[in-house]
Length: 102
Image (cartoon, rainbow, N blue to C red):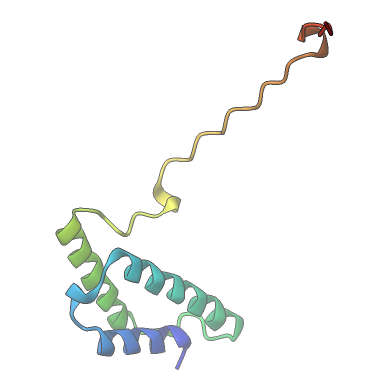
């Protein structure tokens, strides 16, 4: 059994009530799944998790969307690109007035 599958089993059995889930808990869970997927891929267990188990995640996402009105499935991948930060402006040396000591 791959790690992703075990994580789904554990969380589905331990926290079946969607009301237990909050945004921070959801984000930690998604982060854990990401690392588990990386591990499974490195150990040649990719694509072994059961899609039925992933339905548990959809229930949580639907609950959070209904309760808070925010789509938690929106990620940086499907957001518009961030604008470039402004470049610093440097004065030219001749633009600095000469300092006179009194």
